[in-house]
Length: 160
Image 1 (spheres, rainbow, N blue to C red):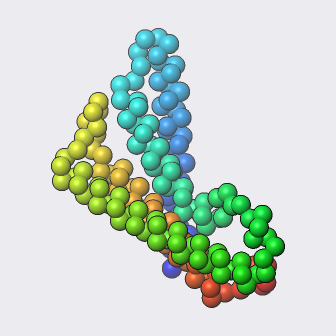
Image 2 (cartoon, rainbow, N blue to C red; image 1 turned 135 degrees about the vertical axis):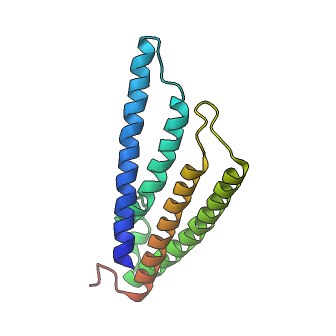
């Protein structure tokens, strides 16, 4: 299970990185073309869609690597067992939050799909990007659940 999640999170990170590159190229190209009076139509929409892919795609991989900002001034002084318990509780609560977020974003995508919601300028369908965001949240949820179980069942890396 962990190996599958590892591959999925890396894939999502590659998608996020590609989306970020496209976002930067599009925004830079649009600014450059504005100088000549011919901006790209729908740049704002595409940048927003790509931004959603960047954010949702990077969450799980970043969590797996523990690259998110942590304020551990207080917990550094706690004994290892208490740190593991706090990590497990934190991961469990976060998994619950992102699990609910994933479900609700998925439901929102269903509503957008049923209503045939399109972007204003380019008439692009919203729901694929919303589903991708829900998938990113769901993958983050799985990573958090795995980390919670690891904190509860296994010794921490400092104790190993």
